[in-house]
Length: 422
Image 1: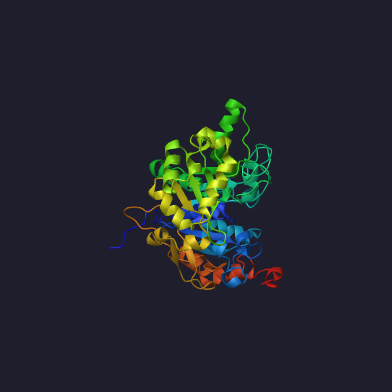
Image 2: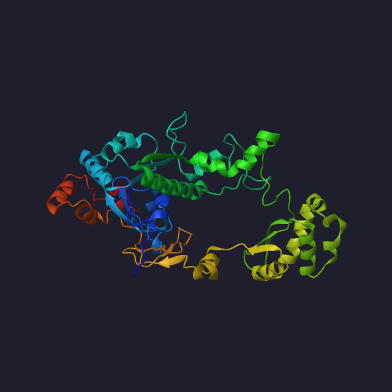
């Protein structure tokens, strides 16, 4: 008998776009939740227009970035600026258990779809908002993407905190939209907690996330160090104050590297023995951590002179066998072909009407002992499930649906400017 999925029966209406909001609900979708994504032909989700595109051909349904965050979802297309589009949205809200949105604050209120309006339609609704800096405060209206929150938090640029990523003699190295990848798991946990709260009490709630604040939590030790000791963290490349060598080193081949991390003097002695005991590893200036830190540039040069004569796999094998933390710096192709990920079915191919059979990544990286995680549906084409959702979920008739299409509240046509470029 087929096992029931842990979130089977949970219904999510997603107004969220870009990455954080869609990635948040995908955790539940992969474990059985029914997710209906609301989009519009009149204003495209930004990641539908972002590469890489399948076959190198840009198109509203061929972005693999969009595909990554939206499998296992249905998609309807509504014009929320049309009063009848908002009417249909409210009918869908009456169907849902959870509503998610990631617009800038006040956008949903402008449409009459904010939490206070929605709870009048569905008193026990769980409503999740995720925005750049939260729903209130002097900067609440500042919209942006993950790389903006990344800079605000202090990972990259001077924006109230400090610049952390990169080398001290170069401009900051951006970890791109790092907050896009840490905020969704926080949201997913909050949604699960809200579902449990509603199960016990019958009450819904509004979950309101500031992506800026969620990201700062990941800098807590550095913020506390400043609060307590007055130290302002800066850029140190790959180095750490309590480890040496600690970095990435060149290997044989075209742009191949390996990461090596040594914290203790015992590990350093093991490293020296593992690479054949060259005299420099026994030099007094390298035999303890303080000496290695004082002579770190020379130390890294010496280590690189050894690694450059080996492949990353050889360095891994030699050092890991000696108990030293070492691992290749993987290229995308290495990750895609990784035997551990293959064994755990991390990449799954699913038929898509436009992209063929792309490989989707399992986002829910945990596996339940009794219920499966699955990618059973590809990412949806824009408006692909209008008929199914309105007929099967809302029980609307063909004539009624046709009326909404005729008046434009259900959208069907892309802007001419977009069609001209694809």
